[in-house]
Image (cartoon, rainbow, N blue to C red; front, side, top):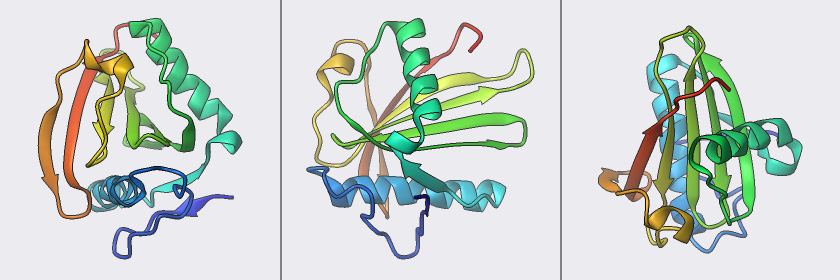
Length: 154
């Protein structure tokens, strides 16, 4: 069942099994606020087991581009298009959020972003490869983020 994320009243719905549930809910709400303010898009997620196409697409990009496999269990995912950009998000039980920004036009920006919820450790599969910058969020506390540019067609 899908859930439209409310960033005014942050909810942990769908994320309850995460050890950093409050921070992950804040991170998800932070993303929802961004897309509502920038694109007037309602950020709607669904359980990962109902969004297998999205999860498989994101995991395929991670595997093909960087030989990465995320160890944590995916809890929720979403995929949508705004202004010619295909966006996908997967939220993991560990508190990790992985997003793909894939401009549909040739030559556009394409990247994978990683965000770590406040209070979680850097996942072992990312620790040796990525440096994480910090940013403050009213909804999510301190978010640590990193990214890489996608080089191939997906």
